[in-house]
Image 1 (cartoon, rainbow, N blue to C red):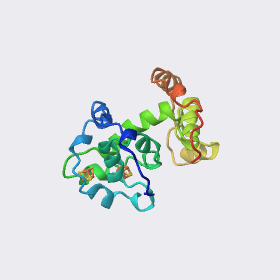
Image 2: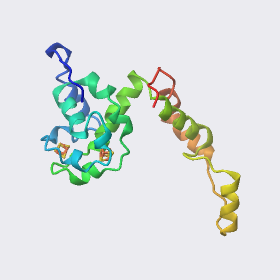
Image 3: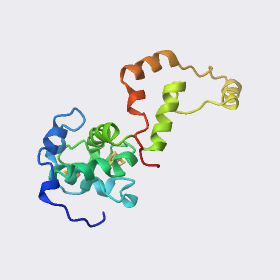
Image 4: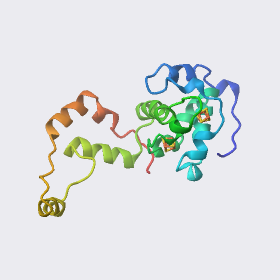
Amino acid sequence: MTEETIRDSELDPDFKFKIAKTYEGKTVLWCVQCGMCTSDCPYSEVWDVKPHQVIKMVLLGMRDQAISCQSIWQCSTCFMCAERCPQGVELGRVMFALKNIAAKEKGVPEGYRRFGQQVIETGRAMEITASREKERERLGLPKTLTDSKSIKSLLKKLKLDKLLKDKGGKKQ
Ligand code: SF4
Ligand code: SF4
């Protein structure tokens, strides 16, 4: 994490309570900053802001830093941190609480926006190519089915399309 001087006036002391009120962030106040989550996170080595530091930012009221850091988007939701946390903090879910705010205020980073757009348009997270379908046929597997209509209507209800609108999200 790069060094930065932060003034008291830049902190939001209620931020942790706002996060704790969300479904995803309800465990955030239980953190005692032991660092176990970071020691087991498969990506923490390469993250500028480590998992326990993301939580620390929330607890200290560093709202802007917490919703601006790349770690919240790079988290793979593997939940290894939650497995290891002695306090039962669901750190991977807290990341969602932060992402939800970041998406509304700063926009979704370009790579994730494109990915989300593909799910909205095709109903799939991955493109199923004709050759893959052929391979399934050769192996005696049924055709891949996607009820894209119901997926699309579900995503519309969740307003994912609005959330993904370009607000100048950072390139990833
Ligand atoms: S393991 Fe749990 S208590 Fe320890 S720093 Fe991580 S989130 Fe906080
Ligand atoms: S859920 Fe995210 S923060 Fe937790 S261990 Fe996995 S990648 Fe790391």
